[in-house]
Length: 68
Image (cartoon, rainbow, N blue to C red; front, top):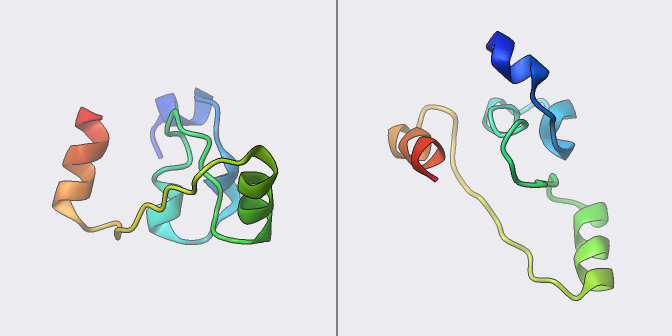
């Protein structure tokens, strides 16, 4: 993790053990790990669930993260 990332606000992925989830812990998206909390909140707010699937070594995942 770079020094800039440690100063950035984090989302709910900050405490996850997966390298893929950890690399998205400082995205400007309020990501939640898959589980009851995310599903309950989506139901409560009547919002859809956006699922991000990937792995930490995926080149195109890194490109998309930089360009999005």
